[in-house]
Length: 153
Image (cartoon, rainbow, N blue to C red):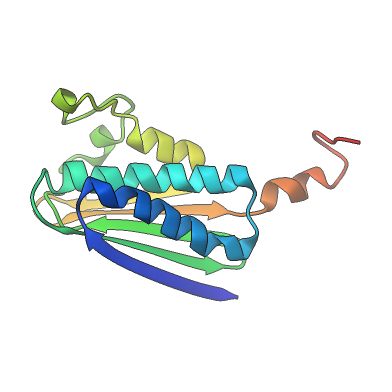
């Protein structure tokens, strides 16, 4: 089964929570665990926050979030049309931030990588940034059904 959704909203910090909830609600059709939902919500939050704070640098703009479900995999894309990045590798280094005055930790991409199965980043200065994250839902329980791993009786 393939299903998709897309939302577009103003690049305002107050909309970050909306993006997290919208994606989480859409993923409920896969019957995710609470941990899987928390992982996705954290990754979406980081990607949307980066788009708002770094992509638009307090200027007006929009953020596009889409989610495609195919089988057990969710593909989530967060895209802005802001300033973009010249050096994606540098931006993805843990603790790197362009906004230290905002007390940013520089861990956004590290969190996205930790909580999702895969992350791809495309960016071009003056054009914007597109972050695509993949997560398989329901796989951890299946791994434990073969008698290996933790089990409670």
